[in-house]
Image 1 (cartoon, rainbow, N blue to C red):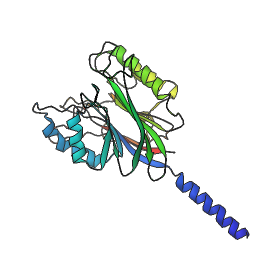
Image 2: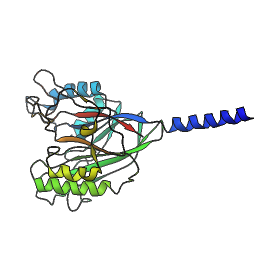
Image 3: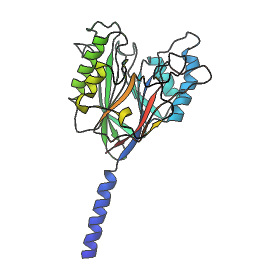
Image 4: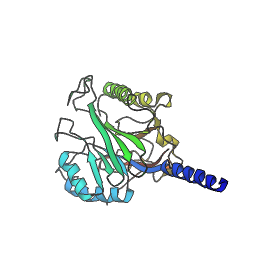
Length: 281
């Protein structure tokens, strides 16, 4: 009997630990640059390079900014391992999206929503802080199909011109994510149009370490350290990051990288994507 009891206890412990094993996932943020027919950076010329970049980087999930509806459909057609969730910032299929792409064989969306960066966040296309471009947030609560682990991914794009709008956007974003189920792991991706470490919007989001900039906690920084904005011209050395990945309730990442993908003089976007490997407890 003691032997049988020991076996049952051991088996139970094994099954419990297996069902609660840590999940590792690659997370990316990527401003796609909206599709245009203007040479030399027309979408038709950029798409094959972007496909190669994403295939080689192999993110499990990634938040995008600026993608137009047909542009996102093109990406989905080229990368059938992913599906995406989003809405146009002008409503429906109109305007730029903050779309979230995910491996559909691994993750299941449990709920999602959108809000606009304004004093009336539920009003589609609203702007009240002096910025002319509509800015918004898309978020999804995902479940890992194999383990049942859940996490949030929140994706955004702050204004590129109006600093007070960026500061108010940071305040609103922080207020809204704090209303989510705070015990779940939380990942925030975005083009914040603000330099990490020096901008008040960054200070607001990372105050008291409620959200953590994983660039600062990663055990390894792979590849070149360059500005995440390249303007379709060149990689600029230095830690000028306006594209960030922030987390809460997640272990320090194994590594992080600014992916400087290009082909000759052709860049797939005017931003470089940032990718990291995170572990969900």
